[in-house]
Image (cartoon, rainbow, N blue to C red):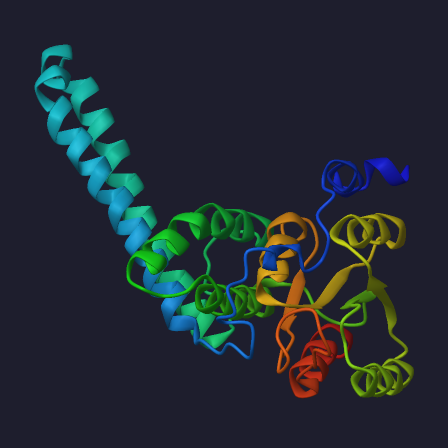
Length: 266
């Protein structure tokens, strides 16, 4: 298989010239430090999205009922069953997502990891809009999304000894880089320090890992998860920014080692 054909990642790299940290170009000085938000915020926003979609489906059904009856009873019942079946499946999916995220056990029925991740990526933009309308910042929504995504990866990804790649940002402080080198030697990790989003995608296409751990700010993790997670399981580790974004950031090494053990040992 040629590098350019590896799951479409190299093609994305050619088109995407975003640099790591570019998401902070409009930073106003708020939210650049440590951001901690639980999974409930994104889950609540996602359920709100599904309720909104269900409500719109019911409204459309109500508006077209007279026309459907004119077309005959069979057509009426067929469309009605399709609409109400869609609403029921959306509700079931929401329940499975909440339980799987809370327990990190796979409660999804007949849904592969790729389909779950793709569905989550479709829900995410609308969930963010709803969260921001309620007054929650982009960073708080991002923190919650990354936690939910990580939980669903742990619930659905195949584990065991695998070819793992760790991608690090350039802005890590010296002490954390040194400590990471010790951990990488202990676990025999393959790692890469990315100078930008394009470079990160290119190295993924070159190395073809079975799983990825990405260390970055929530804003960059969201972009990476949306691009890569449908093809390769990704666990995101948000960095800590005591001096603001893109400067002497640090890692929660407990979260990092937990992710490593999940992919390498589970």
